[in-house]
Image (cartoon, rainbow, N blue to C red; front, side):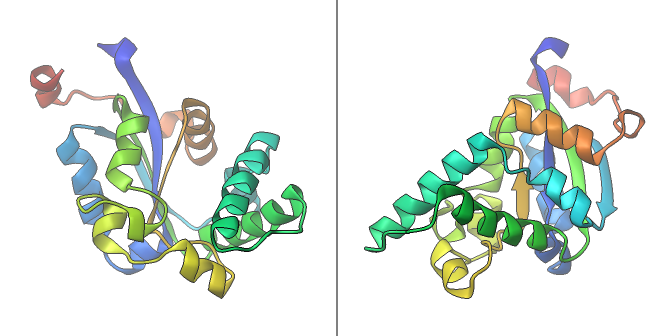
Length: 190
């Protein structure tokens, strides 16, 4: 069974904390069958936010492509370079992460990363299906965020890939802060 278990990083962002949604968000992961391996409340500083949102070549490429496509759909061709576009977005993301205390968590289980992303829903709440955290608890969108020159306020972060999850778990938690314990229901579920 251990070979099927993966860890993912989930964070209730400050807007989720301020709205009192921590318990509801935790409940959704527990009900799905994932196991909480670690949890703490943290106020990210600029250094931690920069490490959480590094501007890797791959991130710049992907983010710029999605951004250009989104603006093109509105009939706007962005003149800035990919790096200029992503530098602005990266600054917004880091500022949002550091705006208030967050609840950082490590969840684990089979397919934890993929399942975590499904529980959370798409980044733009207006496109997130009902039953997801973002689909049920927020109404923000890229249109609103772009108009206000800020990132989408979407309550929660979930690692998107194995590499991202490993980096984020190691960034936010020391090894001795992550716990391994038995959940009796795992024997039934897995």
